[in-house]
Structure formats: C-alpha cells, structure tokens
Image (tube, rainbow, N blue to C red):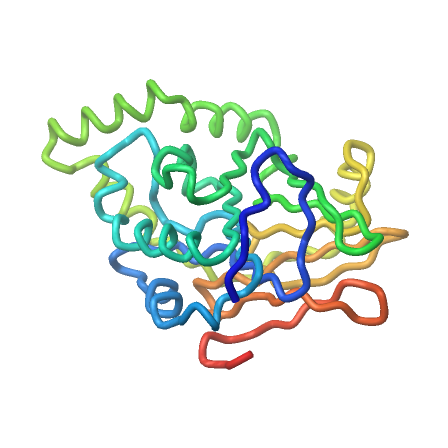
Length: 255
C-alpha cells in the first residue's frame, strides 16, 4: 500500500494498520530485520512504518566508520520510504541518523521525543524509552551524541585500523537482549506517574526495555513493545470499538 509522507512539521496521526518495530539491533551479525523487510513487496507494506529505536546495533550518524557496515540496511529503508511513510525514533544505539537517510525518512531525535499525536480521540506518546534514567545517564547520552565526540571516535577508529568500532561491536555482541526485568510493572507504574506530570497522553508506547508488556494505570495505558531481536515480532495498530488495539505479528505471518 503506497502512502505519502506526513512531513516533519505536520501533526502526527497514528494510522490504522501502522507497524511498530523496536529494538531489532541490526548488524552484520544480526540480519533478521533485513531478511524480513527485503522480502516485502509494495503491496505488503503498511500505511506507516514506525521504527522505535535501536533498529541498528551500532550506528552513529557522525562516525562514517559506523555507517559503512550498515549501508545495505540504510539503502533498504530508503527504498521502503519511497513507498510508505517511515518514521524513525532514534534510540541509544542509533542516533544522528537524519543525514544518513537524506530526508527520505522522518527522523525524530531523542530531544524531540516523545512524538505526540492522535489515534481517533486518544492522545498517543511515542518514545524509544531511554528517559527518566538519572543524571548519570543523561550526561552519558549527551556525550555520545556530541558530534565532536563521534568524529573523534571515527578518527581514532581509522587510525587504529577499525579497533574502536570492533571493540564496540564485541561489547554489544556479549549483551543478551532477551531478559525479564524484576518488578517491571510496579516500576513502570511509578514511572507513568512521573511521565503524566510532564506530558499529556492517554497511551505511552516505547521500546528499549524489551519486555512486551501492556499496563493500565489510572486513566492511562502503557505498552512496552516486543524486541524484534528476541522474538522477531512487531506490532500492527488496530482499532477495536473506538479504542486502539495491538496485534503482535511474527515475520512468517501474513496480513
């Protein structure tokens, strides 16, 4: 289904049938997302594709040495964006990516998240998920998003024959993306109380934590998306009796 871009400056409306994909952690050693998307025809595509961050395992927009290993996936997303509206919320593994996509993809940096829009009468907030994690994390995430730091990283990597990017790749590969967080629901309810004091929303949707859990809390709802890297599933937006619903779909399932 072909569709037109909504444009960066226009109000965001979440569409019936939109796909939400989070935390795929694509890399040359983890190609599941590429294998899935590359097999889709134009008729298979949704009206909107929302990439909810950490789509790449290691992609820094101002460090060219991190871009080259991901070019195949970048090219594929640009091709899809010519047929379908693609919105990319940057994560903590992939940021500064707007120049990479050359305007074909609507990129929402962390500083512009949550992306707040509507679905019917409901107010929807979309975020990668890495917020309210303390001062230390805020300092860290500001540092790694600094263009000068990324360029220095790239220079050091070039001078050391790829040693820096190689070390980061080895570090990421040691991580286990599929896990359960103790008392996650309890923690998220406390977090929702803080989020409600900052933002106006009926439903908060995010990735980052890899938990695939729905929570109702007071008059708001929360959905932590499944990590594509774990179950190779994504979410399709549905409308059920005037409210938003979620269909979890595996890569082998047809619409």
